Image (tube, rainbow, N blue to C red; front, side):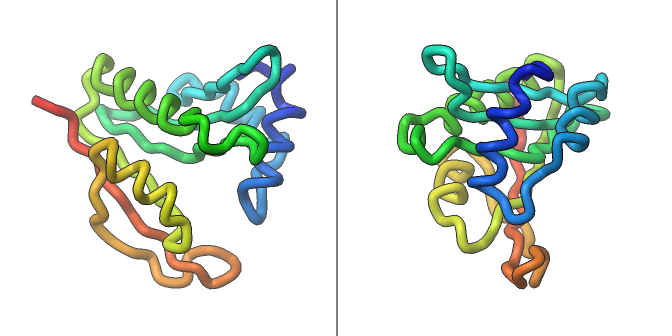
Length: 140
């Protein structure tokens, strides 16, 4: 992800999250040395993105989103696989993320890639929806 991608990324964020991240939040992540900001480019169009942190041997997945016009094309799966592969290569032993409890497709994706439910944050999101906390352990 580069600064020039942010208009497209903001469009995806607006369609995916309530409230969506702001331009300033994305710009801050682009400057963090421990952040990974990645996009999937399909024929010159940004179709999906991910934001993660890798700190002290631990992966934290902050956001994964796909443009509605590009859903069901496995872009999110590709992004998460690459995050896990990169984290493993960097020596990470574990990872975490939170996902809305009312998002079964995302929960199924993360579960299929080795994440397991470990906790729940009741009424975590602004609309009162719970957050499911999921963890991943690197293969040893």
